[in-house]
Image 1 (cartoon, rainbow, N blue to C red):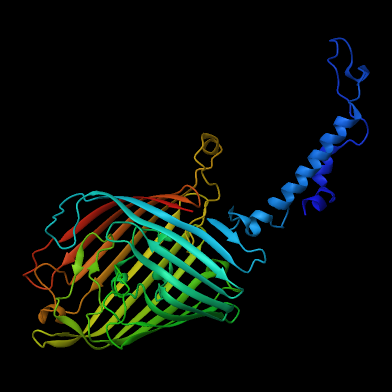
Image 2 (tube, one colour):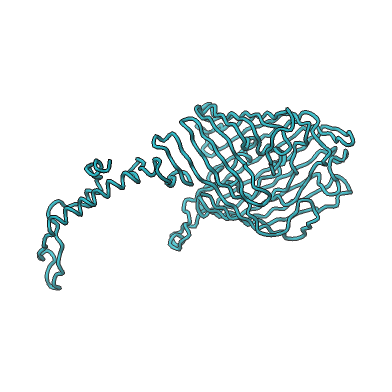
Length: 483
């Protein structure tokens, strides 16, 4: 193989390096008063010059085989070693025919959590100030044959426990009908659709207390009508750990299932005002039965530093549950915003007392991000136009990365019967929570980001017996590194 390659025609740039074909000359040092053009140029011996030219040509051919040239991939990138991705972060390993592929990427998030003002560890779900490894997620994406791909993503951060977050297989033969099977995050809300490393704030809003976060199931996703309409249809297990911000997927506790449908429309994707090209409007709904468990994780503040509400251990579902989520997002120039509302109808029963009711809970959020530099917020985070690479040279050229500010308001209200029927402890859990968030984000590069966030939450109990804190403040300083 290499014998044949050595006789291949060298690339054009290699030929340029070996020019000129005529005898090369090397000037001797001229006298100060002697013109350079009059200085004689002795010739090199013919044999050494030919040997250098031949070695240079062979090195060029070998480099083109191993590394690649132009749009062609070399041996390393085609399957005999790791090579960096050009358009994606991480590293990839390909088979010779390109049908099989492994892509290693992931991210790390390290935090410092501080609590200014009053902060009592006697309040439910509170923690002391300190450093936290929030996420440590190696992600392995893979493609099998032409139309099958998948992902395996654990979270190794020891904050609570290490667990497997994603493990699924996709069949993506058709853009209008892509099938996903396994354990994954259902696309129930536009906020939930964002990746954890793309969030403007540290965590998602209070709407996530009522959203299906991760579960086992099957989902069909597609884009139709010139990609202006996206739909998502899915069926998932009905278990105690799926709904809520601290999701813990588990096997089914009964024969009930949850059905989810979502429709998003981008009305001005192909025509209309340019300012509205990235306007998305939609609605999602979920319906299913819940009887053997409460089907609800503890409800947390946006900083996940305080438990707003948790059902008593004797409370379970008592029939059908329904969720409705209108939602929207809009990005234009230096601005971006998102908003979501969720309203639920849930049948609950206290197995100890026999008290039962249909509860209606509601939460909503609106958030915005504004770029202070000449950059554009995006659904999949900001990509700086002038990334900072950590050197003084980069800084002196004005490559400071992207700077943005963000603001968010979120609110949740529980049904009054929740406390009237003693489904939860009215002395320590709130009926209403109102959260405010402010963020200053520095996107140094596509791979590195530093966030400074303040979260404030006001609590109001259902009656005069409420004795927990009336407010909570939290400062979050986060460093994110993705690869």
